[in-house]
Image (cartoon, rainbow, N blue to C red; front, side, top):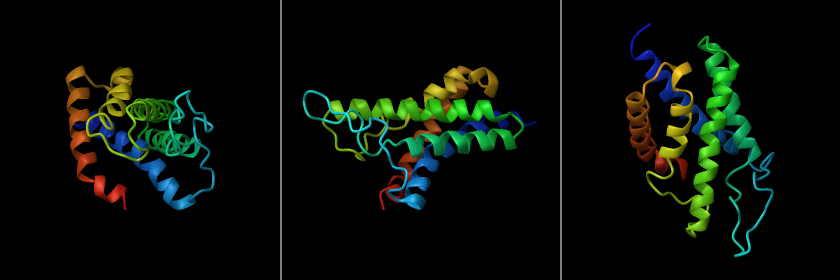
Length: 155
């Protein structure tokens, strides 16, 4: 196995965790689009997370990562954990953005990429065969790639 294999695997899992919810939304449209926050609003009238964070997206991201890690010989559990951690951090980012009064779907470069990349990379560093510097470098590459495809996501 190449020394780059764990790094490329981790980057691919980040891409899957973040692309699968978008693809499921495009494919299924409004079917299964129940929001994670169940429509909850805070005292100030703002949504907890918003309509863009759905159970369908969480399940799609976790399953996509689970299928990938199973196919790569790492078992389902690693991928499901990776996708769930990434999308949990993504939901936390949405919570922060709602508190900052940013509209759902708006982008805050850095905040939209780094938590969802770093959380699974650091928590799962050992089973992914990554060091801390690897996790930081992969998160930086993910940030740059995600910024590069931002326009595609919003079409």
